[in-house]
Image (tube, rainbow, N blue to C red; front, side, top):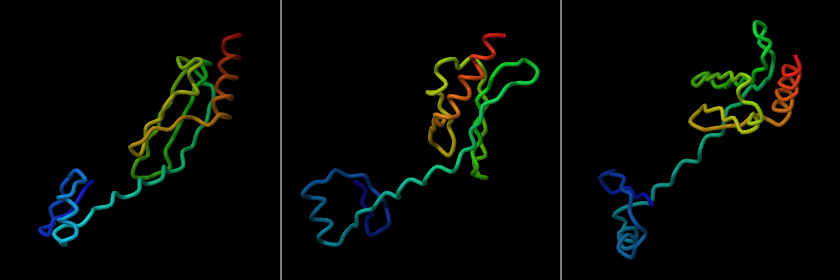
Length: 112
């Protein structure tokens, strides 16, 4: 757990009888971790690259401070559902309907 001393220093300590004595004496306080921020909305889509005819999966973060974007091409194959888009310090996978659209486009491209 984390505690803040009277001088403002934050320390990582084990929960122990000594820590409890310090807390009871008012010599330190417990520091609560902030809840993680929710992921910003991500725009997902699948489409066809005009020049090559290959399908792609694209993800774009709506958070202006992050604004990450990633496009993945045909190489995903059957692992499209497991592709991770990293943004805002976290990973996110594509929604099932977008994966289904990508796989449908990939199957159509394979027939050509």
